[in-house]
Image 1 (cartoon, rainbow, N blue to C red):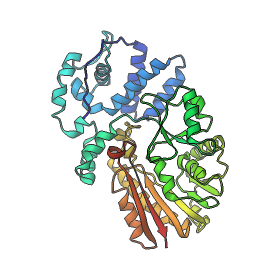
Image 2: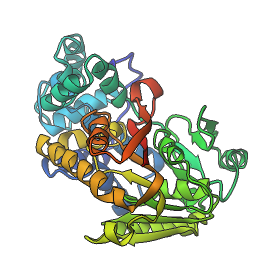
Image 3: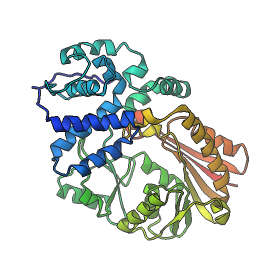
Image 4: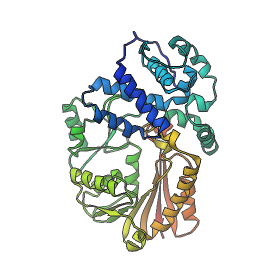
Length: 403
């Protein structure tokens, strides 16, 4: 468990407008089940006069309060939003002002309770719902302690160099010209990581030279081993992060059919592909007849299936409070259904990669086994990505060949 209170620096004063804005976003996440990223983006758009320091204060408050909700509630001895925000501000070294009203313990009392926090059940210490703690322990056993601890750490910004626009050394030089000292990620030829607390400015994102993509996610497309000139289907492409990677690996030669049920995501993919110079990508909306319409045409097939997303809790800590057991059960059924129905689009001898951003075996190997049991496929390789071992988001991928 993270140590909550270190040696605090001289307390800093807070601005009331910023404190109230941060608490308002937190309330929208907990009470209205709003998506954290979207609430934060909307607040920043509505308040363009907020400076870099203002935005940093609000973002850190919101992310850390949502991430550590249960632990902060214990420290403040209150589940009230204003109280857990106050506990987080004490962690950040701020002085709780007189105008901040909350029903909870004073700052010195919160600090005194840190010793007791270490003795609380894991679900409280690691700030997750009881049902999720029980599920993680039952599926991962002793490994769950390390995995949930890793998923509670802040995520660095990973970039994938778009090799259709520049090489990795060129991208490093370009980033350095803007004051961003990016480092190479060992084992991933196109990956870079920014220093803690650094982000890629919006203006630089629009140039298409790099894409924001977690290092774990960057392991998926290479497992498909796409070759220039082939026809590749990305059957659950979303906004196209992996489709863009596939296009780069194929040197923009061949065709990547990027499919999704969400028209807005496909429109975003089209915009990103144009920016990246990935002219081989063709967005395709999914309909009921899509598997039959594209039967037997793909040399490679990627099924990046809808999943719980539990491997991404570093970046979206609000997910653990929105996710429910019934949703997880539904998504497990959908994963097996997609594997069974979409496999028809692959040629005999073609390569299938099934992937999720989950660390749960029930969403990963269990889904693969359901396809293997039906015959027609052989398992070539599995590639689980452990947040605890790698420091990346949690992913799973399996490569299979169609007989």
